Length: 306
Image 1 (cartoon, rainbow, N blue to C red):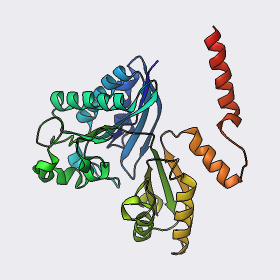
Image 2: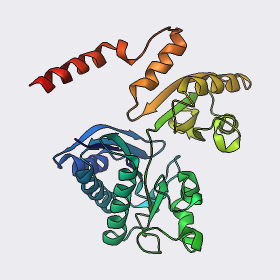
Image 3: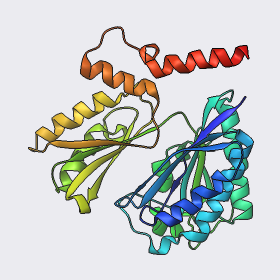
């Protein structure tokens, strides 16, 4: 059995009916399971977590991208999260019986289809990148939808697939292969965006922070607070608890409390075990001590006997 995960991000977080129509394109495919989806009105963005057969996944993601192109018009899209496409990013993640190299090939297959059939420019990123300056998604997305009409004219930013012109309503899309990523946000008890900007700068790798952390400051106007929004690209080497404690200490410098945190989408169990070990000061505790996990192991063995 081969199983791959994908976590496509769509530039719509306020119209639930639109997001549900996009998700329905995956749900109609046998061999694909929608594990989770969420919407954020401040970011104006939705995140969907899918797992399933690699070949069927390519078809499902193509259908979702096509539906997003039909329903989302970036000319009228506003939100706190940077974006460049109606379907903004599509990662492939190896789960079971699939190698990273196979995920790279899947990303190229999907990118080629999107570029040729939907006429949306496609950029390969992370492990699929065709040049070093395209590995980092933030570098590709810089300038966002509005800036891409000029950016795409630069030979350095010629798309990997599709036309050399930005789609007028759907923009461009990044497709790639990567390891597990955790979208982790920390909400601060202040409406001063400059405080969140300084803290984001302190923890993100590009400005001297943690090696596997990407961070931006976001204003949550409806909640009257600001947020440090992060992508944790390797939770084993830059664990959540360590980054959170750094943010807490940095916030104390400005007299600001950490109000809450949130995880967008799914998360590996081991990441949560690491957090429990740290805050509960647990000794000799691991995934094998989680009763639900042990039960699944037992059921799997019994199923193998049958």
